[in-house]
Image (cartoon, rainbow, N blue to C red; front, side):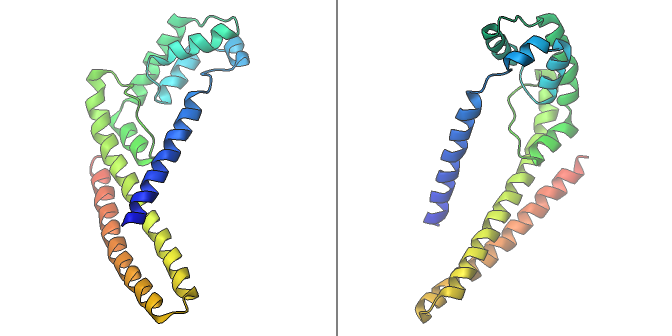
Length: 185
């Protein structure tokens, strides 16, 4: 159990580091700023789940290139895209894919999106948990194959039985989550 907590902490630290690196990336390159179709860019950003505040990041990135975004065109594209993004069906898909949500949906659309997003995210998380346990089981099986000492083999077999139970529970969790996801079609 302690190894599980350490693994989760290490994964959390890795994800935070990756997020920090990605957050440091410019919203658009100089070339993209110079050649942008601002309506399409707004649409793309909305469909990628970016909040309206993404325009500020673009303003800053493009200012370095000496380009000023066409804000009315960008916002018009973003408004059209966000309506397509903030559907319950897309929320389910977004969550099932394990993608994070950036609070981009307008309040009148957010509840439906978030309800289905959470159901999809539960399925994603359940699948990730099952995969992690299966990987742990494979690793412990290799340990058993290499073990020479009978006491060590006995401990590893006990760990494997525990993992078998945890995997069965994880499969049940995934089945339930997938069933809930299918119910909301």
